[in-house]
Length: 481
Image 1 (cartoon, one colour):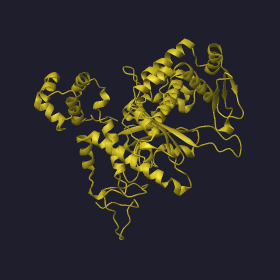
Image 2 (tube, helix red, strand yellow):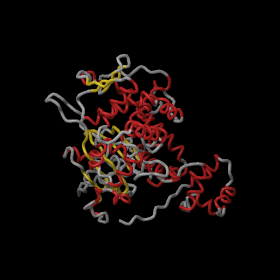
Image 3 (cartoon, one colour):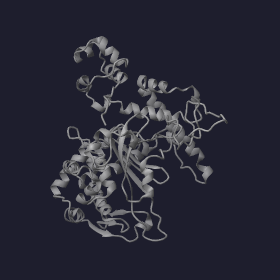
């Protein structure tokens, strides 16, 4: 499918950086080699940003190219639409073009509005807790009123802002893998031997860990790393890699967190957990070797699993982190959910944005994966902003070990732009030029703009519902034209 050239309007971001640098429009135009009137048109979104000016702008303001893409604007627009789906707002008076205009003219103000709404939701969740038989935790300061972002959300925002790539941690893990000569045949044995030889830490299986709700536990007094027996071998290997990161590279994690905007102790603690997990994945799947192998096998996830001795989820997650400057892999988004639609992990290196305040779309193939456990589901989908993705979804996790065991049912989805689909084995047999192959998906129903969707469960914001009893539309909540 031939992709039309995308026009990027980024006037407010150029103007914001110019004002921060205390630079006049004429001065910036001179440095860019264009007329002041042309720059004025770009800053007011009369003209799109030409590709030839992107590099010079990045150099002048010391920012990455992503800063001037419309990715964050797209995410913000979707979040605003979802927020305005709340009945507390008068959605009849909100036009779609007004949301776009607000995001372009005042992105910082819109970001603060989104933050305020999240705090509003958090306050209501805390207030409602006694109604379901639970007692809210005793808190002081801003946390007592819910006027903040939850720590895990703050960490997710930070990771997303970094496009799920942490250079120092990644390169540290890669060097560690090279020093250990960690190969693909027996990484578990090599890690166990390294922990014993270099740190005097034995690795043992503890049959009682799972009853305590633990998968692994480090007993520093006994110098023993205890692992649960209820998991596949690749999980045990991953935990040993986590333990190694905690033992040898806390200083690297601490430096990375100090450079982050995270200030609360709980958020910083969660960030340390995340970086430990990131290190483990980067150690077992070192950047250059994994990227080259992924390209060689056309990103065949099962072949990557076998080659590196990792799980399907670990291979998916690592593919979503390959954004090293100058050596980028395909920009993927990665998401993990349970069968009820609760988002457990979500990272995106492309413009895809998951629903923040509403339920995910039931047409998405991640939900079809639950009906075909351990089988890969492939789908071409188009989001409401017009972007088309190739999505690969599959259930992950362990099987039951007894009749009374209740393992959590989860699935993951890995997606890339259709422009990159030809580099994936999963595009084989698909007609990428046939629009009938593309499944339209969207955010939560109230924020979704698809009028004639058979799966619509709630009315669309900004439209009155057609209550004409003389006919019945395709959707249960048909909008008045």
